[in-house]
Amino acid sequence: MTHHLRRGFRASVVAASLLLASTLSAQDGDPLSKLDTNNRYAFDLILDSASAAGIPTRPLISKALEGIAKKVDNKKIVDVVRLLFVRLKTVHSVLGGVDEQELYAGATLLEAGAKPAQLELFRPRQKGRTDITAFIVWTDFLQRGIPNEEASSAISKLWRDGVDDATFQSLWTNVKGDISQGLNPGTALQNRIRETPGRASPQAPGKPPEGQENQSSR
Image (cartoon, rainbow, N blue to C red; front, side, top):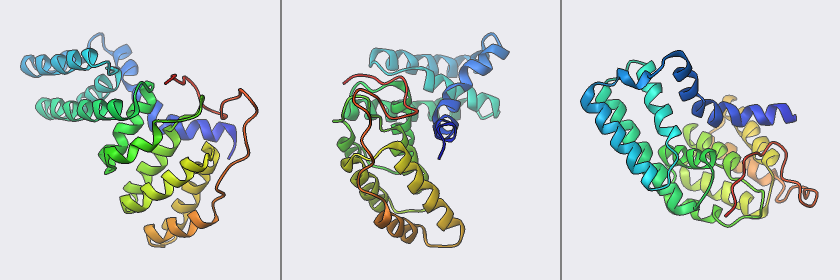
């Protein structure tokens, strides 16, 4: 998979979602004003709680704007934002001071059905390594019907083995292709994980994996 495609893979799942807020804000001075008074107050309280807890507010604003753009009921928007805040806070407590994209990827993974305890393995890591791609692939597997325990076991093993983003993405491509051909999702993963190399070629000293940006220190 080329460098361009690797960047596109991540951007289409995480960054594009987080950019929704700034895009819509540019089109409307205060798009959140479309929330009625009571729900705007409830939404602002959630933002205040997030700020106090050290949680980035942009994913919450983006989620609200997404609901507004889709003309979702105001109360439903606030309920969804509140659930996202809870998940972001949970991921923050498990992984520590990760950046906004990692936090959002972890929250999306929890929403898909992963358990907070399954994320604990990903907290310790080498400098420059990110779990974003691993979480995106894991999330997609769950959404395609692969049982969580099987997906968790496969992704966790590869993470422990130190594989790079390209290996996770190759696994995702192959499993997705097998499922599209009619193979049982769990079987597709089991077959492909057996042929996936346990460790990728080492990166050059001091050079982070290609396509990774904005890493936060632990």
